[in-house]
Amino acid sequence: MMTILSLKRYALRLIKQMASNYVPRGVIFIIDVAISIFAAQFTFFLISSVSEGKLKFIHLNWEFVSLVTIQILFFIIFKSYSGVVRYTGFKDSIKQLQTTISTVAALLLINELIYNIYQVKILVNGGAIIYGFIAFSLLFLFRVIVKRAYQLINAESSSTKAFLLGTSLTDVALAESIISDTRTSFDIIGFISETDNLKRTRILTLPIFTIEQIKNKALLESPSVIVSSQKLRELATADSNILNQLLELNFKIYKLPELQDWSGESIASEIKKVNLEDLLQRTPIKLQREKLRSIYKGKTILVTGAAGSIGSDIVRQLIRFEPKKILMLDQAETPLHELCLELSKNHPDLNFEAVIANVRNSKRLEFVFEHFLPEIVFHGAAYKHVPMMEANPIEALDVNFMGTKNLTDLSLKFKISRFVFVSTDKAVNPTNIMGASKRSAEIYLQSLTRNKSISTRFITTRFGNVLGSNGSVIPHFKKQIENLGPVTVTHPDITRYFMTIDEACQLVLEAGAMGNGGEIYVFDMGKPVKITDLAKQMIRLSGFIPFKDIDIIYTGLRPGEKLYEELLADKENTLPTHHQKILIAKASYEFDAEKLILLKNLQNQIKNNIELKSIEVLKELVPEFKPLTETSEQRNVV
Image (cartoon, one colour):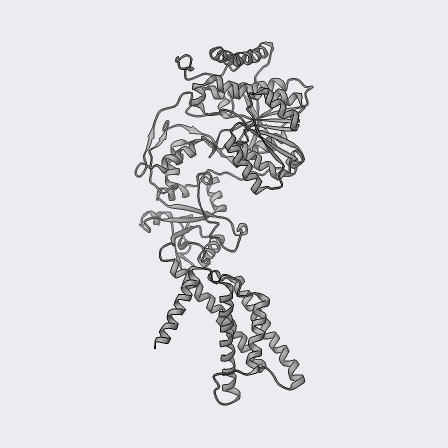
């Protein structure tokens, strides 16, 4: 009695070990051999009951040894014991089937050979087929039992009950994959329909709910929903309110890729939490890859502000076009060092150089141009925080205007082919120093392109706020939410244009390739987003309820801040380009001798660090500049 109990306990411990840890292949091999021995014995038992007229339970003759030896040989050939048992799937069943069929085929072949020579057989041909059926069934059953044991043991605490959004064939296929995958911690408990008209009430024996039904039922304390990336993109671009309704119901939303984009057999590592960029995404950008490759391939490209969020992503996106060398220039040592580590790890064959330099230092910049001889420049280095620049206007002008001038002058001297300037929507009808300083830099670039003899193409790109960029509202809100609030918004009606870093940088590369010189390219930023709505979505995505778990408070507009921002000045018109998301702003700015004198005067005032006079000249140069606040000197602030 004790022996039987001990064996049961040992078997349970073994199953639990297989369900919680990776068992060595040798152990699986021994178990498979034991299963094949049992299958062989059972096969000989069945044959004896028919042919001999009496039951023979144990066979230890040469026929039995031969059968088991052949089976072991094919175990080794196909390595059917090498898979992780708890993750048994279709491929594992195919491998077991191959092993068994090969064993049966070998048995039949050997039977014929030795029968023709010695008039004996290992076992009758029908017995070989019976053995194959028994062996395959037991080998696969063993794996299914272990897999199910793993599911039951791990489903007790770690399983997240979730719905799947959608009822299409693709959605059903995704649900089936999640259900059958032991590596995922999600337990699909039903489907959520995108429409209110249900044609059926169950799929895969699981219930289907409409949004209205979910609103009327307290289905889960902490509900979750999984949606495919394709559907997520469709819902986001179609301005659907389904996602917002789910967030309002305190659902946690997860996304997973389409079937063809899975990186492995399991989707466990593919399921990710939806972030704000996913909810604000638009139709994917289609780049003219071959044209971009023809322009950027084999070139030495300088990227200023390379350690920043925009500059670093421009660097990453340039890699696919095989440049000769990428020069990454920035004054921020630590983030530039981190970018170098990332590139060394992910792109060991990339030829790049990290350059510590300040765009205000023309001598240092000249050395960089002379030493590395760049052919294309992407200028992203800038001061961009509006309130900080309001308090330090001379610094904004020194970096954003003089820094740009230093680079453009050197680009002319060293005959750079393309110079792409990253500007901002705040340069349109600016109400703050930051926007006006960027507008003055745009004007300087346009003044140079008046000279038709120059070969350098100066191109300006202008877009709005970038989600997740350094110092943007997104990481600021995120920190506030992590501290359980309150989330601070300057005004309940304030709106901003947003695009993702990836989208912005792709359009910068595209505009840089299409420009002939002198253009200001304006990007389609979509619809403006209310910052209050942005805050609410971030709170909900973090699993909290706005104004209940985390409060939102309004702090008032900051110095130089507008309620809304424009992408085009009042007197500007736009022309289409071959890319639907890129337009050309045809500026009405007229250059004459007086305006050129103003540019020169502004340079002198900045060099002499005369703040008030610099701003006076800036107002003349940029007549649409209507400051909302006083300067630091006017407030007698040092």
